[in-house]
Length: 533
Image (cartoon, rainbow, N blue to C red; front, side, top):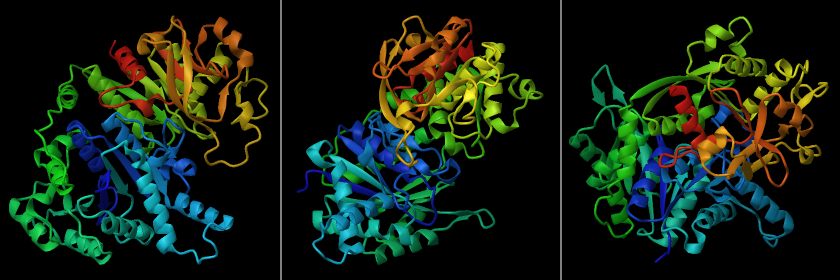
């Protein structure tokens, strides 16, 4: 018997059905039963990682503690499990092919013809097993991106078929997530797309063990029985996933239908008493019964696609529940903000967050937002570029350094208050070359940040090339914008605060990446508390 059990989650009919949420929900239930679980995402695109992808293409790029730029689904995994992921948890076709081609160039294949089978599939299987190596986990859940039937995901599906054959049916199971559309004109839910999707999976040599039916209406037992019969799946292995008001309800819905029990039974693992999920239910109760309500403006330039700011949006949910507060997020396009309309656009907000990003588009709107928050005593949180915009605004309007800017936007600026980091000056390649992953920060005890964290040393995740310019350190501090968080190894400024303000904090790192359901991020909790006041 294999030491590690493997669960694969595939999708059919359409993309964006929520494979990541189903994977994370199942993992949460198994974890609450005492099993150690991790989740991995296999992405079929040829980019080596999502680091160079436009957020409009693929939503936000999520960064792990060990510095991997990964798919946003890894954020869901961490938020649900409260366990960090790593480089090994996200694999792309680009990375697989790059690895195989490098081996071929080195002569590792001893002159053999390099082919999709066995060489690409062997590399995929190696990566799948890598995350479960060292007996750290009892169960590895692997989500396969894309939709069954796509040309690009075929090597992954074939690798699953081989693993099932190599390790045996009690060590590898496949959950297939499909859509059961509801036709309002006839008032019927239709199973035919699911049948065709399973048929497509069968043609690749894989019989799914469990079916999860994504639907907007509750499905009858009769309809589930029909799906079980036509798709050759046990009746109790057909589960529905109905639209819910929050993704955090999904684990409870899956628990009620015994998805975790079915999976454990098929993996020949002990099924103990129902997991109580006490903390999870407490969080849901606070989320659904708020005592306060605030409206926060999220100012960014990718606001047409909320997935571009997925981790920030989820951090508001966690910190809102922690404060028993409903956080209404108003997405505001930074390009829409001008000197003339800034008061009317931002007026009435309980707080503003200026989001991270790259490039010059919409930056003046972000700078105006920081000015508005500073002058009107509105709680302000600036993340990465958001912090840099607050620094630029302060330099221009308080320090009177006319035309102060970041050299990212204006490399000829007379006052480069934000500048390219020294080690970045010789970098040519764009992918995977930023300051990435977890770095230490020492916090001043006389600060809002210290009040929030309650400790003087933290580790937070980074993703940037530009940085607060040390030459201006004393000038800023003497005028009331104080650097209160410093990296002990490089002396880089990590946190700035304005002392005579209700709550004004800028951070060079990304606190949103480490907020989870069970451990909401302290800065977000403190920010929402200030918004309530």
